[in-house]
Structure formats: structure tokens, C-alpha cells
Amino acid sequence: MCRLPATAAVSETTAMEVLQTDSWREALELKAAHPDAVPIAGGTDLMVELNFDRIRPRAILDLTGIPELSDWGSENGRLRVGAGVTYARLVAELGDRLPGLAIASRTVGSPQIRNRGTVGGNLGTASPAGDGLPPLFASDAEIELASSAATRRIPVREFVTGPKRNCLADDELIAAFHIAPADGPQQFAKIGTRNAMVIAVCSLALSIWPGRRAVAACIGSAGPTPIRAGEAEQFIADVLDEHDLWRKRAPIPETALTGFGELVERAARPIDDVRGTARYRHHALGVLARRTLTWAWEAYRCA
Ligand SMILES: Cc1cc2nc3c(=O)[nH]c(=O)nc-3n(C[C@H](O)[C@H](O)[C@H](O)COP(=O)(O)OP(=O)(O)OC[C@H]3O[C@@H](n4cnc5c(N)ncnc54)[C@H](O)[C@@H]3O)c2cc1C
Image (cartoon, rainbow, N blue to C red; front, side, top):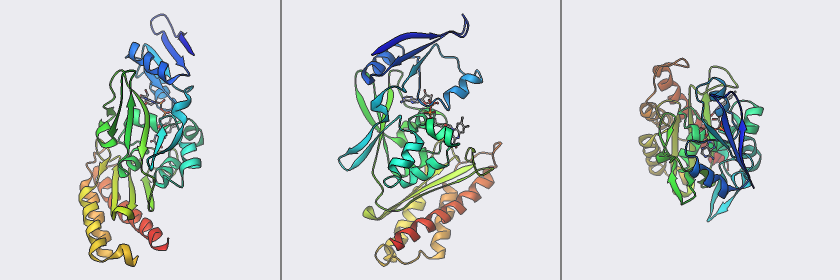
């Protein structure tokens, strides 16, 4: 069904069309026909932009009625999670399979924001402080983009191209993300200026992949995009292999935890801003790196 165009009149000069449909195919056709229409999912970012008059699009494309976007399921051993699955549902339904993303989801806003906000919206906004992004980077997630003409899948690292920038074409919508379920412990830690309802000063997502004998770490809110700490990952993978720690399940030596923290710290590219200084962010990331690796490794040892 396609109800269009419904006009939410603001005034003659600011009238905004609201395009609504409950069909995915029609939504893609509407996007192709109205390339400047701005999609809305939970609205927890977009409505703030509208309320502060930072943007005034000619049309909004309402995606909330499209069932396909709020579906998730398994495909060839990976999970396909619709762009419209909310944080609350991620925690409730996928917390066991995507523990890192679930921990991050629990830190997003308040219950009201988690009931509306979606990872698709976090990807659409592509803020370096988006809490859903580092866990996706640490799991090498792929983003499924669709237009009325084609569908493509792109690694999340390539999807996010800069601060609040992504590679969505004008006629495309985010359909879903594809991600491997955890095969080991995952962690996410976030520093804010208070305990709740806070934008990250910096954050770190860490995943242990025993099947691949790998550790992945992704820095949030300390660079133009989330940043994988590749040198730190390689360093700790070498330590774990060298000391046969995957098999022995023994503690990681203190010197290795320190080295890992230093390399994560070094990978960050933070700036000074209202939430914190670059120096503080570097320091804090070293602490988060040691902490999350210790938590995750302890969970692996005790499993
Ligand atoms: C009080 C408050 C607290 C918050 N706290 C946090 C926090 O702690 N951590 C955090 O990361 N964020 C936070 N946010 C920001 C926001 O909740 C998240 O970024 C959320 O993920 C946005 O999802 P949404 O579904 O509401 O997106 P929307 O606002 O609907 O959309 C956001 C952007 O994504 C685009 N978009 C949405 N869906 C699609 C799609 N399928 N295809 C193409 N483009 C799409 C929209 O056009 C828009 O540009 C907070 C916001 C508020 C108001």
C-alpha cells in the first residue's frame, strides 16, 4: 500500500511531504523518485535535527511501517539484522549472539530512545560517537544497501566515510547489516561525563574470536570514524600464540596488557572538544583497552 503524498504542512514555505508505505519495494521506488527525501526510522536523530531547524527537507520517507526492516534471521551461519531493529530488541532478542552490540545498545540514551532508535539510524547518521558502530567494526559487519535497481553489500569500514558521512547513494536505503555471531566473549566500554544519557567521550569495542585466534578492537568517538586498532590486535594475537594461551587459558601477562593498551591509545585520532581533550581520550582508551581485554579474557578462561 502506498499513501502519498501526505503533506505535513508547517507553513507554505516550509511544507514537508511525508511519504509513507508499508512495502519495501515501494519505499525503494519512492526513494528513486524523490532522491532528496530523508528517511526516518526511530526519529531519535532526525527529529532533533528538525526541531533545531538544522535541516528542512522537502520530503521525509517514513520507514517505520515496513516489516522487512524489523526482521532478523540467520543466513549461511551469519546473522542478517534489519536496519529497523531497535536497540531494545537487539538486547532482548540478540544479546546472546551479539553480546558486544547488546552491551553497546544498553548504553544508548534512555529506555525511550532504545525503544525507538535503530542501528540503521546510527549507520545513517554515521557519527563517530555512534555507540552501535564500534561493535559492528569489531565484527567486520557488512551493510546491505538497496535501491530499486540493485542490492549491494559493503564492509562497514567502507560504508562510514567520515564524520557523519557514509557512502549511501541518493536512491539507496540501508536494508540490513550482516554480522558473524560471537564465537567468544565480547565487550564494550564507554566513557561519558555522567553515567546515563550521554554521548561517548570515547569508547572501545573488543571481540575475542577463538575460532580464528584473533582479538578485534575498535575505538569509538576518538577519530573521524570508528578506528580498528590493527597493531594492537596483531600484537595481542602474537602474545596469545607465543605463550599458547588459547589452549592453556592462562592469564595474559601484565606487560602484554600494558602493551596492548599503549597500542590502542596510539591508534586513536581524537580531537579536543566540549566533551573532553584529545590527551584525556588517549589516556582513557589505554585504560578501556586493558580493562575490556581483561574482562573478555577472563570470560574466555572461565568458559
Ligand atoms: C536523548 C538522546 C540520547 C541519545 N543517546 C545516544 C547514545 O547514547 N548513543 C548513540 O549512539 N546515539 C544516541 N542518540 C542518537 C540516536 O538515538 C541514535 O543515533 C539512533 O541509532 C538513531 O536511530 P533512529 O532509528 O532514531 O534514526 P533516525 O533519527 O530515524 O535517522 C537517523 C539518520 O539515519 C537515516 N536513516 C535511518 N534509517 C535509514 C535507512 N534504513 N536507510 C537510510 N537511511 C536511514 C535518516 O535519514 C537519518 O539521517 C541519542 C539521541 C537522543 C535524542
